[in-house]
Amino acid sequence: MVRYTGQSHNIITIPSKPIPTGYKVWAVAQKGYILSWLWHSKGTRPVEIGKVPSTLGYNKTVATVPYLLRLLPKQPRESPYIVWLDNLFSSTKLFGYLHKLGYGATSTACTNSGICAKFVSQKQADKKKDNIPWGTLYSAPTISNDVNQFA
Image: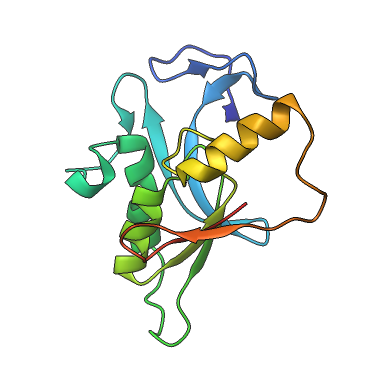
């Protein structure tokens, strides 16, 4: 969020954010420097996003990730970009799509993001009774075998 309290149709208020009112901006950054960005327009979501690929479920919010990555300089195939995402974006659909485009990606995930069902049930059981020992690591590939999930 970019703080702004004047009058504009595109001002957004999200009470839970540290800067609750202003312009919402989607950015791709490295080491604290913004490399490229998109404005969020009230009612239409991110500006400039055209047709959203069906593999992403027509989700314009998630589609901002590959769109912003395409704005970066071309990267040699032997050293692709690795993207670290907020859990707002993380889903196995997005990670599979990014993999096909040649990007690596990692993130934390919410239990409703399409992750392995076994991980979701283990998380729910562990919330009720702390039964997973500290430091335990689980992994499972997606059905398509192009995304590896860790818990």
